[in-house]
Image 1 (tube, rainbow, N blue to C red):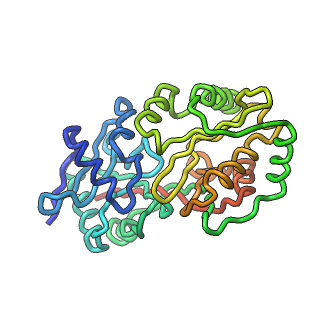
Image 2: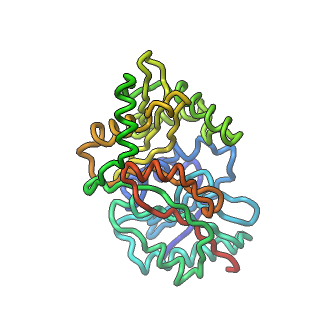
Image 3: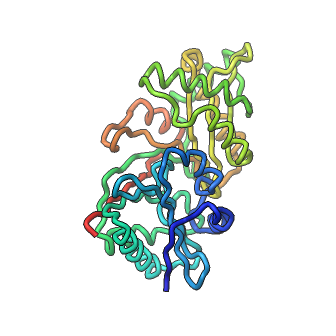
Length: 315
């Protein structure tokens, strides 16, 4: 009934068209996004067909004898269309495991798409992972998410920061100055963690050019019109996701991020439906909770959504 083949770049248009009409696809699965870091990963994405038509996609990469879905993406399990039933998905995952075994791949690490990104319910894969594939969860991260139709009030700590920012003449606006924000972000990560952003400035510039409507930058500026904080948000059909959040020492001291998210949530997305997702506040394999970071996000009304990673072995 189903045929599984490895994706090839000649199929990019067909792949992208399916993502747009799938149950849980976002622009992160578009090949114009996925392929920006193709030099870092050995792509082993799969296409599942039924009667010559695409039925499902699996964005994935290969490392050794392990298939990952996909190490370069925040999430990314099986992408299906609205007609996919539980029985179908169970059969597809059985066949994918057989396909991997035939290609000498004996471990499969699967990052499920959190339900907040689903256009319609699409957790058939979670059922199949446990009951067909004998998978186990190996990491569980916690993200802070706002249901935009049922918002909570900001905590007093966040309101205090907003008042401080307003007293100091900070303003917030949408911007295309990725370089200014990236340097704030890079300095923060370097000074605090001796690390660098996942995306280089050139990569962010490329992605913003490829997805100008979906990728937006909001900047907080001092009274002298100098950037002191900001966030890059990714807009998907159901969820707005903060890909990066950062502020300079001046911005942190003056409540820049509090005013920034007051502007974004209560002005830019005031009438938006769906979800606003601040992203993960747990590090490593999920056991290390960044309590300071999650305190800030929960102060805006965010509450817990899990990002899970599963492992299937010995198949």
